[in-house]
Image 1 (cartoon, rainbow, N blue to C red):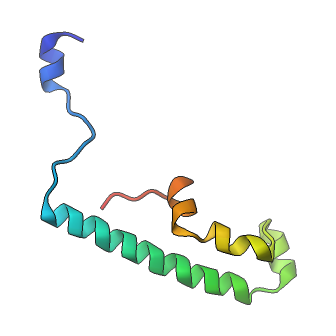
Image 2 (image 1 turned 90 degrees about the horizontal axis):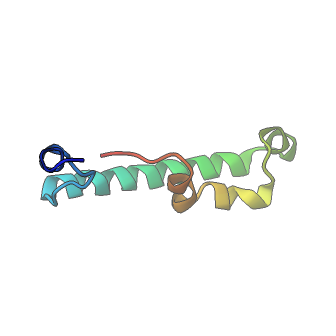
Length: 78
């Protein structure tokens, strides 16, 4: 890259602004509420349906944790 290219190249970082921070916080809160409702729905399913999905009852909490979901492709941009 030349010096001129470096001047035009934008990094992926955003500046800190209050509106962006609030949007990301609301997005994370929404995602956590969604995971909580999905966890409840999975706990209500019978074991044969969970087996069809490929998970066991003991794995529900791990798969519906916010950290797991965000680290495995469900990232969001607020």
